[in-house]
Length: 278
Image (cartoon, rainbow, N blue to C red; front, side, top):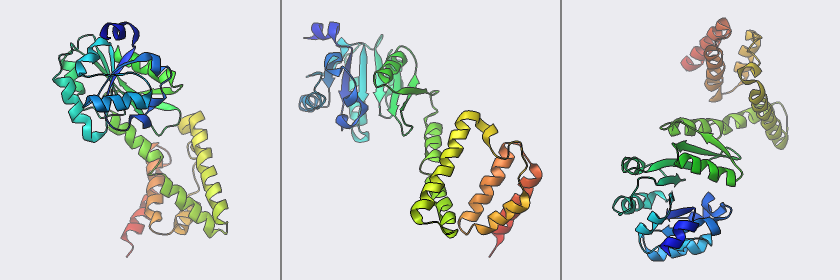
């Protein structure tokens, strides 16, 4: 069986947790490509293989030594236990590639030190894209998996995961309250709730669309100085607790993009006044 897998299987899998909800369950051709499936027990390995309808349950983690590429997927609670299985196995890691799939990086450095090529491949909230980091040859394997899923790769530098996650949070969870406040101001103008939400969403969508085409130059104040008196009236129309945030957004934008320092200073004064207000 091992010799047969060595010549036919493209990759093996060591896993724990809800594999059926990961992108691994959607890999095209996995019934042909997946070989040995290892887990914390043979029973769990059998269940995973049956769930995926692919692969052969391994009675020992050493069976993963029959393939060049090993996919790793685990819930946080089982991650360290799976790493221990690999760490204490007799697998010869030189020439092997390991891809951590929607899993944390714990154990990756040990495998690299043992001679394996290691990459990280993760799903993301960014539509149609997956995040990948690592080095060849595991990186090449990961990019190929992304292509088979008909996704685009966001290739990041090692150690920059937190920055990427911050960017995603800024563009999603952190942004939603701002859109909601925008809709609230539109409601104050007399718009119905459903219309206010649609108009607010349309404004943010247009801004994002224009930025994707022109970057910073799409900013309304990039080449045109804003009317400061009008801006101050707008700031006054915004109620607490949003007013300080609006001031900071305006002032930071002007300062960071190096435009209209006098206007930025006036807004900064308005922000200070707002903060000092009893």
